[in-house]
Image (tube, rainbow, N blue to C red):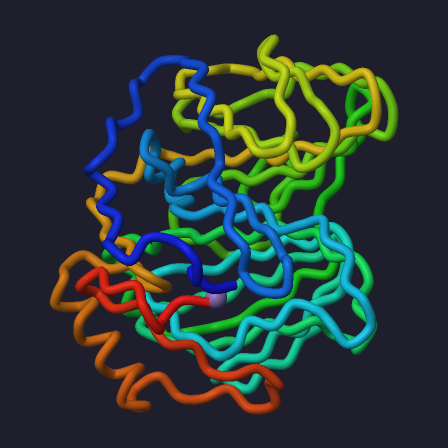
Length: 318
Ligand code: MN
């Protein structure tokens, strides 16, 4: 997806406190935004309190939304640099198309991982004319300096490790958990889990104490370390935790993300992750001039324009 709706000023990772190096419980309200045709997303990361959780620098919880015939998600061609986009689909079907020529439908239980590296363009559209219900999470992972100029790439992961524990079904989306390793290729130590209960469930989930973590409920209600969490609130957990207490009394779904605190300062603006304003200006100019990034073929949606970096809001937002 595209960072269409929110701030036009850049977000600097050092604007926020660093990982406290100890367990904390910070409740952070996600901001809601509409990205067209009544499709609401809740942006949990970045936020004023926490710009990153490990290398995870962006987390949109999209939907659930019910589309009528002829409607659907349509995020037209737009560029990315310096990050990986990580899409986890819960309900619906979305077609990914990119400037490398990949066309891939993602279905529930699958991950699309696009590595922008030095530059890529993609579009995401509902896969059919009668899309029905859509529910997804899209995350971005900042690439470390040593990897951010790498060649772009795309991978689709159809099967992921699943563990049943304490009445929860844990899908390892990224990294390692319960001694199972997700196939997604990432470039810094991190973890991403989907933790779903079909009924009442209770679990002490083992954590890497060297990571900072955060939890976001995607449906229902989950008690995380005694904090009741419903969709729309991110619970930042700090670091130095050996395990995490999870409990629910009814069907629910939680996303847990974590990673080694990211040492490098990043600059996030529109769909770009970089280090300097000059890089942002160059990427924006290249995109606006139709050069450098390549093009996406086959998307029914119009190409997206960046917001005005000066903060002038008219015209550029959708
Ligand atoms: Mn995107």
